[in-house]
Every structure is written in C-alpha cells, then in structure tokens.
Length: 431
Image (cartoon, rainbow, N blue to C red; front, side, top):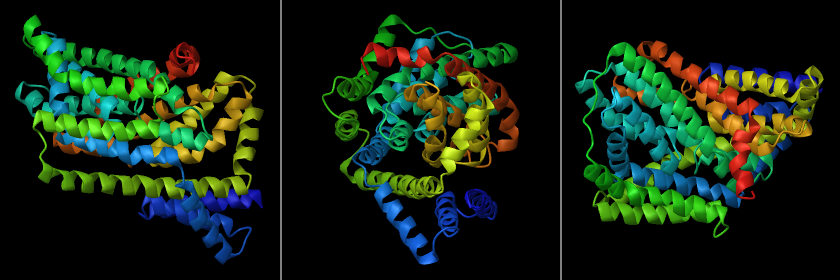
C-alpha cells in the first residue's frame, strides 16, 4: 500500500503541475488523493482541511507577514537607494564597478528585507538603466542581479529559514540566522569573482574614485538602515526578543525610518499593506498545503522509507549529502522554495541527523541549494522578476547565467563539505 501511495502522490502532483494547476492547489489535491488510497473520501478531505489549518497554527509563522511587510516598506521607503549609493562608494574606481555594486547592494538589501524577489526588483530597477547607459551588456547585468539577489535568503533575517525551523520541528531560528552569514558572504564573494572574469573579458568601464568625505557621508546616510540588522539579529541572539517579536519591531523601525527619509507618506501605507497582504496570502497558502502534504506522507510512512533507502546507499555522510543535494537541485527547478523546504525537510532530516549531521548545517545547505532553483525556469520567481526588470528574455539571459550558477554550486559544495564554516558563528554565540 505504501508504494501505491508514493505512486499516487508523485503522479498526481506531476500531472496537476503539468496541466497548469497552481503549485498550492497541486500540493493540496495530490495530498488528498494520496490519503484516499487508505481512507474514505470524506474523511480524507476533512483531514487535509484540518492539517492545513493546524499547519498555520504556529506563533513562529507570524514573523513571515511582518518581514514581508518590512521588506515592502523598505522597497518603497528609499532604503534601497541609500544602500546602493553606499555600495557604489565602496567600489570606487574598480573596472566594471556597477556589477560589484549590484552584488554588495543585494547582500545588504536582501539581508535587511529577507526577500530575493524584492532585492531583484528594487536593485535591478535602479541599477539596470545606469548599467545600460554606461555600456554594460544587458543580459550580464540581469544575470548578476538575479543570482546575487538570492543571498538575502541565506543572510538573515530570512523567511525561508523560519519555514525550515518550523518544518524541522524546532531548530533554533537564532542559530539558523547567525549561521547564514558566512555562507551568504561566501556566495556573494564567488559571484563577484565570476563577475570580475566578465568585466575583464568585456573591458567594462571604471567608476569614479570616491573621496573619503563622500564615502563617510554615504555610510552615515545608510547607517540607520544597517542598524536594523543590529537591532533585529542582535536582539534575537542575546534573547531580548523572539524572531516573531523582532519582525514586528522591524516593521515599526522601517516605517519610522521611511518617514524620516520622507520617501513614504501616510497615503502610501494602504497600498503597501495591500501589496504585502497579497504576498503573505500566497506564501501562507503554500505553507498550508505543503504542511498537508508533509502530514499525508508521514501518515503513509513515506519519509521513513526514503530515509532507510538513503542510508542503505552509503555509510559516508558526505556522500549522502551529495546525493541529497543532487535531488534538491532537480526539485528546485520544478518547485518553489517554500513548499520544497516544507516537504523535503521531514524526508531528509531524519536520515542526516542519524548520521551525526547538525540540523543547522543541513538547513543552510538546503536553503542555499534551493536558491539556485529560484533562478531557473520554469518556476524561478527571481529569474522572471530579474528578466522583467532588465527588459530582456529568459532565452537571452540563460547563457550568461551559467557561470554564475557554477559559482553558486561551488559555494554549495564548499558549505556541504565544510560544516564548520556554517557552525562556527552559532557555536561562538553559544547557540
């Protein structure tokens, strides 16, 4: 019966996705069909509805709508402009400096907003026209913007890491947040090295040398935005407030800062709230249906069977991690990040924990892996936003993207094989 359940789950999900049914509905319907293998239709439907409701009944999940709202306020409140100005001042006269600006600004903005889509939209919209004006290939600029925007999903605060904490059964959000810094910076560094190769090949122009006085001014302008990281992450790490409370503080901080910058008026708030509500609704529906699928799989003992199969393949923990990475790279091409984390964490985590792999390390590895998926067709949300902002096509940007994919995969390999790179900061803070 177990194998029949697996077949029904996989076939129904792929069929529904193949005919264009939205991901959330595909998850819920395939979960329902899987339960009907063992129990009657009406109880199956009732159970799925109950699991969707209880799946959202978590205090930690409140952080997601607050961080989404904070990101939307930052996007409209002039914070992105100030971070970009700071990044431009730092790069100075470096040839092709605007590509470095894109990566640095994406790390800064993504770290504050926690959204790759918001980073790709805000930074690409500002830097794209300037790159084109200075002779940068449009597809190259789009490639850098798309891939660098994902660093905000690893560098905290990150909604995906909160989702992983929920799916894992309670891995410390504070530990995950702190663990994300070094891997996120590593990926950003590898992307800048890749950009440097293109800069040399295309003889891209250098910027102007930034005087020390102007550099200090740009830093001071951006300092209130950067302090948000200190307030949010610092407060979580030292135990002043939880991640959920920190997300609410972030919203208040962003509202006050945006009014100080005079970039947002009272009349703008309803539109910002509506936009963030739309995004929250999509994310929460995905979480609800993903939780129902996770429960359906657990009730059929599917995760236990997959874990046993994985452990039978090798007794080398790094080989198991490589196999899981390959599976997740494939999954990430066809599935959005949030449902992928919620569905595959309960499947893979028991196997890796039984081999002595730290769940914090596994969580960072998993999120970094799935970051590659959001940059690939057919469901790559960041890819579509980045291409749209750059006014180009996926076909034109695909080849320039490949070297940056390789850089991200190299970063993933380093993080996978060198756990201490991820775990050093959490252990330093006693998390």
